[in-house]
Image (cartoon, rainbow, N blue to C red):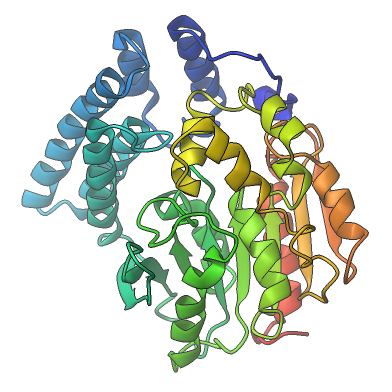
Length: 387
């Protein structure tokens, strides 16, 4: 797809409404994130009606379309048409996702985020491999949450115990957007666990340097499941989530068989010059800084810069530690996350595997996800145990 092969340009300013509409239509034509799951005809109608990029008008337009689709899904369910209901609920969830995109920084977007989760689960209960929502306790500090929520899937006919991969997204793509990745691993005989990245969705914590605490109860849960080979699962972090996959590969190397950083940073991403240069990349529609601030728990721009800088894995002294097998994947022209971080990671600690693809952020090509699945499958082995 031409749009995915292009590099990420940096405009230096927010997009106007008309520029945003052009951006949305282009992404819709090429089926690129965040327009890859939405119905094209319905989405074009919403784009034409958009009157602003403010949270209220943005969320209301997308949510109105989501409400209509949700009603169609409920009607299909009443008629006993499970396949139609699943399809319509999934389409409704995609519309609500856009309603809360890129983050629920307005009450109307909060409502859209809730509806997105509800309709996603409504669709998933009709799938051949259904999704189970799991809540486990979390020992949160102060105002932190007290539970971790994730979505669990396993091929019902596969012989236990199964290899398992734990996966999470970035700052705007959450566990509900991990379905295609989950499907790819399910097809290879894996069970999948999808949760929200630190500071996003239903995550109980904000993006502090030790926020990888939220993943530890999930590792414990997987270990306790008798039908899973959970003593050393694989991990995959998408976009900003790749940062946490890299951290866990070092700090929990004895508990992880292999990890993938797909488009995340390590050090240079968190330096002031990159923070300033990456405020308005063309790969992002709007509110990148606001979305990152929400993830970090920052309340102003000064805190945003300060909190971002303290995430550097180099400054924390982590990168020179040994790590589990780690694959680094990105587009060679990424302007959201510097490719220099990949080169830095190869110069410290254990040897890493690297695959750069054409294009911008995350290097989306038809070969990217299959390459990741093949690499993970190789490292857990045909039986699901590390090789």
